[in-house]
Length: 224
DNA sequence: CAAACGATCGGCT
DNA sequence: GCCGATCGTTTGC
Image (cartoon, chains in turn green, brown, cyan):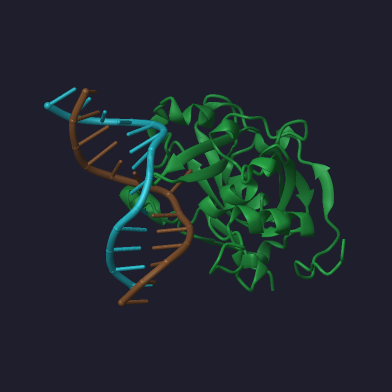
């Protein structure tokens, strides 16, 4: 390629796939530990008919996550209550939990912990890592449509959970899928993140959770 | 079976 | 900053 694509100063990225054991830990361990990892998705673009049969690889550096656990009111699995929608949350860690919100958006979660406990990490934001990714994200997020243009800062391209599923091409078909390289979505080791660069704060959009809405279970990587 | 309600986004003021 | 869009999931009658 042209070699001009610069996602910022980053050390070498370790492309080793994260093993299932990485996810089979408590959700509050996994959620901050996912910062600096790379999420990879090989999914159809689903745009023009000609492109619909092609597959594109999108690689995003994980910048923001949130933890959800059945012990608190913010979680779909609160109180251990199972429904057809949240079934994936109760499986052993290492699979995807994908659900639909606000009548138009998909959200991508990583199931954590042991089988029988409802917990998952919501992936909220990411940084495009290469030219192929940027090309695919431009198309999927509609940056090339008339009257629209991509954000000037690359870290504003995928800065919300619904924007992230749009960029990766994730929808209900990935719900319950194992996160492994032989599937369509998986994680790589990525780059190390210093502990003092991780900022914890309250999760967004869960006012109905009462006092649990103030738990500092949102994790953001602030690159200095 | 009907109806309310979102773990949000993008466009406009 | 506010507001409208839009529909799967859940809950209650």
